Image (cartoon, rainbow, N blue to C red; front, side, top):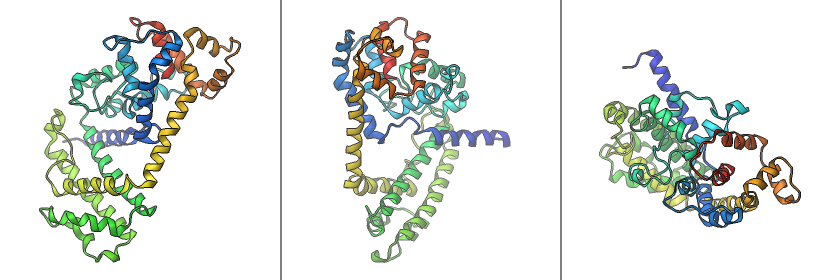
Length: 359
């Protein structure tokens, strides 16, 4: 059992994990991630050829750095933000938000580098980029983490519970779906639930009588029930959670887990494929792709040209100058700080510089 001080630390770490977990997501979420990945897969060869840098072979160490962009994801980007990109002055660029080891540990959802196929079965996504590998390994060592931090189970349960329900609520408020459709579809749950609990209280009306208020009441009630279920499972499965063998607090044969599964299925079938949602995602994909195309000239410069551009000591390159002025000065300083660290001395320096330009 935890004492009062330990309980405060536990709660604060869980809150920190929840607050930070989406910090690295690009605009338009997963469609933004997909746009970035596809753009680099499509363009990296032509860009490297323009800079006169040899295209890395797949078995090379240089190619591993490219995997950071081929597998771009909000999780490793978030770790980069909280450890590097959020520094407010030059001495902070090695510390980012200046978080504790424990606070960094509860962010580390996937313990896998991009391109590491040996861990792909265990971790479906990458959790950190090569540029943050030293910090990631240091945190793992200090916290003696063999598997991910136990508090991450709580964050994932909170994510599952809150976002799924909130997405459906947004759909009702925007008239993309109706309360009648929601409750009518969810009545299938009656045929699956083992226990007729208060989960079903909102289903006792005729279809035409359901309103947005019914869903709001359902949301409050179901959130409490899901939370109690997550807490009880965490306590019951504590040893499996601490040794990393348990899968998820909200994935078992319980009524609550089955109902959450139906909520997710409903959102996939009736909300995420609605024209209002898909049109925005397609537009977002095109926005991200278009921005990368627009800034491509900065990536096509060789190291000397880019250095001269930063010092404003080169004639011509008018387009590149204006593109550079669109970027915050802070990121130029972070770029210079990365170069000074000489993080990958065993790799081609021109290729490493180009990668830091991308960061």
